[in-house]
Image (cartoon, rainbow, N blue to C red; front, side, top):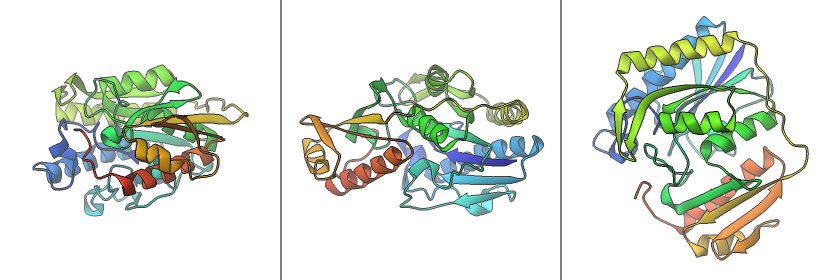
Length: 276
């Protein structure tokens, strides 16, 4: 059984603030170790369910957060950027399941460190008119590749967002949002045991992939900066909905890869810190 783990950081056990998840932050070094332990809990659960091949993609920010020496030796690590497939780099149809560790809710939600991919630079996103963030777009893209998302860990808001998107995914809340930078934390060992047990149970159960529409999808993104939207209109197939909103049609996963290009363009035009 081949398992793919996409590891973000904002939804990791115990982390609540930008200083926990940004390089240079006061508690970042502790945060990256907490991230590794949540991932290791998922790896242990996968191994107990019979996994023989485990790939972990460091999917947060600089994508160099996980230190190989702290990662369970049974897993291979994809580290660094750029990655054409972003949070799903290396995912292939041969994988049997995707596990999302440390995920967070989309921009505008009152979840811990909520945002959509680029801090406050992205104000809103829609996939076929449905509000979407990292959770929904990851799920839809994985389904298009042919691999089901089976478990998601994060705060309770992220878990609710995942359940609203696909109720068959097992959610594991490791903390409960009190506000965007405050949470009621689940005890560390309890949270990691919950991750391990949920992954083992989910991978031992029958899995199905959500049906993916055969028709092209429309991805719409509203940016904080009109300059970003204007520049993106230079990419073939990108159209304008208003001065700060662009959209494009295509099929996943190609549309996801195109969105990665949009973010690289936006990053070259802006210099804003996330979580402002």
